[in-house]
Image (tube, rainbow, N blue to C red; front, top):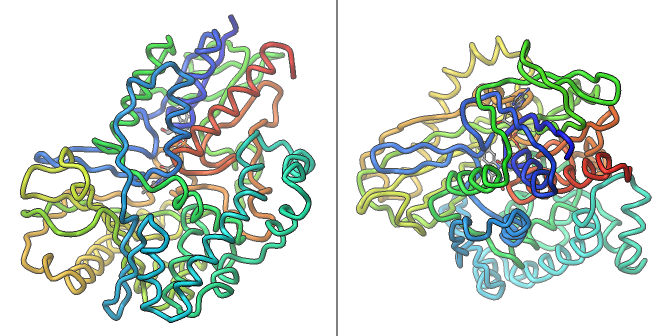
Length: 480
Ligand SMILES: Cc1cc2nc3c(=O)[nH]c(=O)nc-3n(C[C@H](O)[C@H](O)[C@H](O)COP(=O)(O)OP(=O)(O)OC[C@H]3O[C@@H](n4cnc5c(N)ncnc54)[C@H](O)[C@@H]3O)c2cc1C
């Protein structure tokens, strides 16, 4: 039995810890804050449950598989698959209803332009081709270099690979399939799942549209907090030693690592770091993916809002130009999550809790961000509440009480560089291939989490933890 340290108790770190413990190694996990889950936090307020980070689950089977590998399927909360994946609202008051069932969604798209119904079908097909050609080989094994990826991609046939890889930006792909600006905005939004701009990120991110279509958009009963509790129980059962409130540092000592809080370090044979890898790999000066501003609303009645609503801005291009020049957009796109629409455990009867989020830039200068955020937060809250009241009459009559908020500074306090949700910014044609790798710069050091391969989001960080643990095992068991 070898000794392994894991720094960081986000979903990627917990998954890596569980995998290594399941393989028989002695695992100690250090989490700097007082709670596990990293960005996936939650709180309750007067009977309402609010997730403060992830709200939407894609690839539920990847999560199930992670629990199965940890012998913990029985601990998994129930997943609810949403028939209406999201309602997209446009400034003129029209809605695109994105049903899981493609034909039904296409009917809604047709109202924007007679060609956009067929456009949705062809976009879905293109997204599937991209997934088969590039997504599957990218997700099926740790990314250790372009040649290994190409070899996996070629197994699917050179034709598929060429179709999948002759990619432009996501916006260009959207223009090829949709005639209306509204549906182009819908397609472009998938870039924000990685904190990127549709005008700069590769069309490869259309694969997210395919994943949502093929595997659904789900809600975790009880919220993401319930998933974190279940994963914590699973790793505890496997004997992982958890140290909360211990910000760890590390140092290489010969073939081993000295890891722990200052003054309390111990020796380990391998180390998995679940913190963002950019700074640790000498890439701390790179531009960062987007951050987010989120606030939470207690509503005195049960609203007829669907689970996910996106109210688009008038000019999407301008929004991203502002975001990537470091400004908070004047008129941001607003995302609202209303989990009580699906899950009665999230709010008492006749009440609703809303998670309201806008994209904002990651910050470069902490002191300046501390000075600016109180004023920015007030302005954003006022903008969002006004926007929601304008679009949804039911909200005009209701009493809305803001009961909490999270700024990029809160994300930065949990180790996110500049408050960036995803860290690495995958802009450019080869963006996804420039991610910091799972194998760190020191022998025996591995990364897991949203900042490394395969990327951010709940299922992918679990996959990342699994991959990092696999590489760490190879090292510990002398197979590297
Ligand atoms: C507002 C918001 C909305 C999101 N929405 C979605 C969504 O709907 N669906 C989705 O799938 N994903 C979403 N995400 C993304 C998702 O939450 C993240 O990609 C994922 O949770 C990150 O997991 P991780 O393993 O990278 O670890 P993180 O969550 O980044 O956790 C890392 C942990 O490491 C700890 N740490 C760092 N340095 C040290 C140190 N030196 N010592 C000890 N501990 C340390 C930190 O305290 C932290 O707890 C959202 C995120 C945010 C913030």
